[in-house]
Length: 394
Image (cartoon, rainbow, N blue to C red):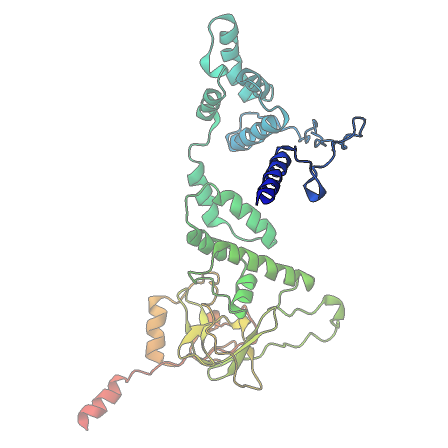
């Protein structure tokens, strides 16, 4: 027993000594070695700065202003844009001095006494503030009634050459008019040539639809004009024979077909689509011109269509069921007077001496400007006094 107790004491002493020894890292617990003193540092990525351009776009110098009021706005816009792009950050004094150097004629005579007063006597405030300068400029050269003049020109504007030229002139005037898009759309459409309007009609393009914007009408007119240019400027509604193919002895035969009430007709457009229908009757429009009333296939109502837009259909069949837009407004014509209408009611049927058609005179014959069309206006004959007396006797 004494020997066992001695061994226990020795074991306890050894354990105590082991706990007192410093612990050495071994295996995975060993920390990484420090980097060497003469190591190569990691490479540094240089920062690349985007090159800044010090050159500016060179603009054409504006034209000098000679005092004409219709050029004042153009001069103001051009020289302001030139100063902003070429000399940004320029002081008001330098801007005004630059603008004055571009004044000529009456405009130079206007500013000279003010400059003399500013230098020799007392400072003129509006010669040192760009906003005050333009205010004085507008008082002297501004167009006071510019909107009124632009509206007057806009209402009288008509397409005379290409659609592109018409669009440019129309938009330049519309910029000064306080009209909404629908009003400008209708004014633009009224000024187009009849052949452009007829092409829109044949393509079932409804200009009067509220969903149709002014830009849509402009784009469609430009597209139609391009198609017409592909045919060397010839209208799709006027089939003219060139002079070099005509014989000197025999005149070219008339290729227009006579159209009358009950005929099957159709229209074609630049896109090749056809709309079929039937002439229900022939009457007068609001301008007094004789036009056919056409009922399209699949529609319940009739619409007035100009004669040049129609062709006789030799093989009528089921066509499109989409309703065509209203016909284009043609040039205003002189309608019959009150005495002429009264005479037509008394006579009942009138035979035209030009085309042998019924219901109109020779001077109102639709074949006069457009050869080959026969108009027959159907009217209900009023009973005369003899018929009424017979009924009374009966």
